[in-house]
Length: 172
Image 1 (cartoon, one colour):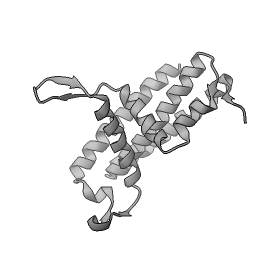
Image 2 (cartoon, rainbow, N blue to C red):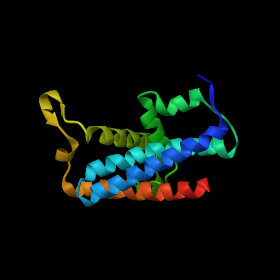
Image 3 (cartoon, rainbow, N blue to C red):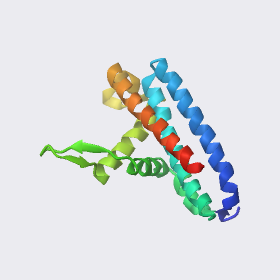
C-alpha cells in the first residue's frame, strides 16, 4: 500500500464524501419530520465527521499536495478519530456562552472537548440499548424529553446544513 493518497485522487474522495453528507442530511431531515429527533441528530453528527474529512481532503487538493496515509488514519482508524473529527469541526464554530459574571465568552477547549464527547456518545447511544448495571436498561431516546430531543436535533441539523453549504462553496 502506498504511503500517500495522491492529490489527483483526492477529488474523487471529496465527491464521495459530499454525496454521503448530502444523504446523511436528507435522511436526518426526513427523520426529523417524522419526530425521530435523536436519530436525526445522530445522522447530523455523522455528517459533521464526514465534513471534517472533506475539509482535510479539500485543503490538500487545493494545494496540490498528497495526503499521507498516516494523517488520513488519524481521521479514520481508531476510537479517538471520532472525537478528533468532532473537536475539529466544533473548533470552526463560533460557540459562545454567558459566564458567571454575565459576560458572553467563547467556549474553552475543555468545553469544546466535552461537546465533542457528548456528540459522539449521542451518536452511539441512540442506536443501541445497553444494560448499565444498577441503573438498568438505557436508551437515549427514552431518557430525554421530546422537546429537548427536538431542540438538539434542530440545532445540529441546522449547523450541518449551514456548514455543508459553506463547504460546497469552498469546493468551487
